[in-house]
Image (tube, rainbow, N blue to C red; front, top):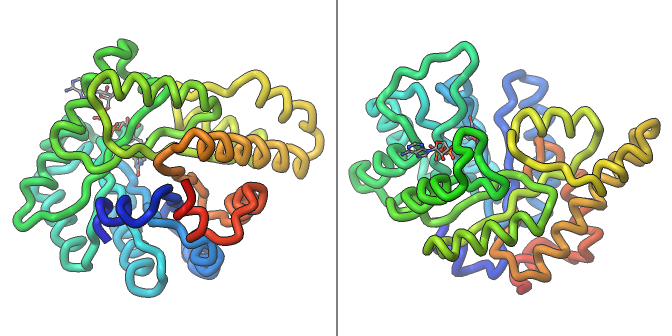
Length: 296
Ligand code: FAD
């Protein structure tokens, strides 16, 4: 379903992000777990893409599996770094044939061992390519960074870059993960001041272990880990179950507060695990995902 229709259907969007497993055992584990995600009735799910095309077929295979074998509505991520225009057109062609309605358009991080050669410099160029694709009707999403993107220290200029993506036809924005709701609300206000009124989903990732926090800090450069959150986690550092419970409870508090503030949607970075998201739904008191989506 086109994202604009999903936005019309659901007052509050709930979406889940998966990554395509590279191993057979990872694939089996995820596909055996998909019914647990289906039970949570998200508005859509998204599938990440390895920048430079390293997981190109894996992303495509998982997206097609989700579309044909489950009730989940998949949106592929697509990064343009290192790709030629022709390669991007080929990928868009396969998604068009598979009946995929939306693409999350990203630049991607330059791979450590990879090349920066290619026809695209920034996500905005990919957005143009998607819009120019013959008979294109893809809904197009873009990434936003409430606490800033490390490559652009000038936050005013960074907002100009986000505005450019919006002006080139973005239907929704998905935020980088964050742990400080006030930073997110302030960013939304700054977006509004810049003339950006595009529906924006808040990126939430529950911390389930101290090592996962270290990984997140690495992957989501610029993201702040508030002292209060770190204190809660460190308090239980010798008890992994309690660290997990504290991380999930923080994320659930974030979600409750976001819903109270009338956020347009919440995007869960699931790491292919359903249990943390299930627990958050339970803490929110949600009897079903569809009721949560209809709620204001
Ligand atoms: P851009 O919009 O191109 O921005 C990248 C940097 O360039 C920013 O600092 C921006 O300010 C700057 N910039 C933009 N336009 C210009 C310009 N005209 N001149 C100069 N500077 C400019 N990565 C993956 O590899 N695979 C994924 O599946 C993936 N999914 C993601 C999903 C979400 C929701 C988010 C938030 C991130 C995701 N990423 C993914 C990471 C993302 O690709 C990187 O953070 C990347 O560095 C930025 O991508 P972008 O699309 O925002 O790029």
